[in-house]
Image (tube, rainbow, N blue to C red):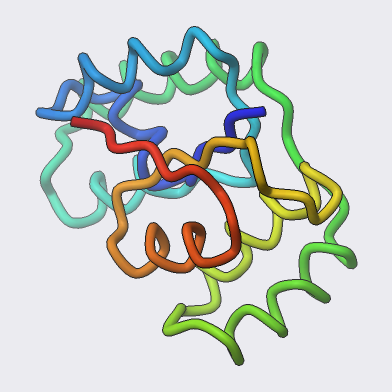
Length: 134
């Protein structure tokens, strides 16, 4: 299983430095929890209206093929432990918690694709094999 943090999924929808390496990794499938980075970039002005439209279309295509973790109570329970254990913000803890739910709390032998340094460190400490996007 290869879990994708939502922040790195955006590079599959918006052309960035990490897009080509991420596209090579996506062949292994996508398991994720939620995505908000496209809208954040639209709000901050780094993505114009036509870019937002194209990115949302690409995201819709990705969503049709990915597996989304929807067990909110189980994710929330793990996230509470993770914020107490690692230097994570709530959203990062929820992402890592969703990955743990996806692997039934057995992260060894599973990949975690992420661009955020703190989240990468926490995922590694939890036992995931953290994949670089570059």
